[in-house]
Image (cartoon, rainbow, N blue to C red; front, side, top):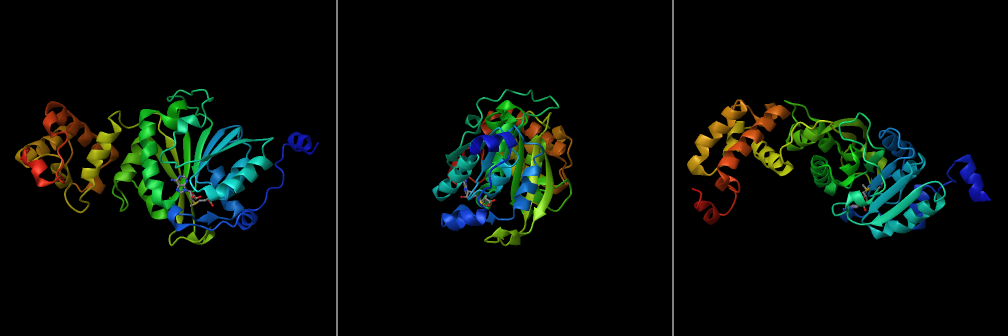
Length: 336
Ligand code: SAM
């Protein structure tokens, strides 16, 4: 009877507070998992609302911990919520939330490392929405990410976007993620800004990243030393390139390797010494980019033109494709 009343009024039953859950299950934040818990339900709801409308949608939450953001997600009644948590100590508190809401929301708890988890398995039943359509699939990836893995996870997911795989098998699924504020500022950094780096260009080639709001470190338990930025990343209908992800990442790594020097210096390291001068010059000529710029002065398009030139050059000179100026000297000798 209680269940049917709950369902008919379409209201979640009163859920235990996160403080209660932490006390009940004797949960303590562990440094090794970068655990900083958000207790303020207004903030967790604000994070979830940044995702837009998730009602009846599919949501993947990364690192739910004791479940504060999870609660706010459940309160929006998605059709299906999958939470992926590495630390087994949180499973009982998450089971309690899943059990309390099982008549209204399907919630699956996966104990796994998000860096290994195959996101396409989360929602196998979702119909595909074409990438070029204005409409996006009602799929959202939400997470107060552990700092220790946030950049790596974003890079992994950008690669998935570039290949339209994983959570992007279904179309332009959106991400709502937290980062150290400094990292969030790098992700959105425009040309010429102090924070401009490889992560800015990578993020902006495949998505439109927005810093929605910041959360002071003091709002977390235990408080991290830094503030936190909540960033949404919406995949672009037309990414700025169709070049392979790994090639773009490699060229950007070289471009941004020497921030205060001419960008020519970074690009030169892509080539072995005997052809370095000639091929570096050719790369800039073909790309129509000024070699005397510093990396942060390059637009996303200019970075991509350099990547395109590099690709053309190694397509014609495949012996240089694997050249690594940091490899031990013995390995480099053959190319010198
Ligand atoms: N969502 C909770 C909150 O906002 O209060 C906890 C956030 S805490 C910053 C990060 C969470 O991610 C922790 O619960 C931690 O155990 C989990 N975590 C850490 N590394 C992970 C990984 N590789 N895969 C999945 N979860 C991970």
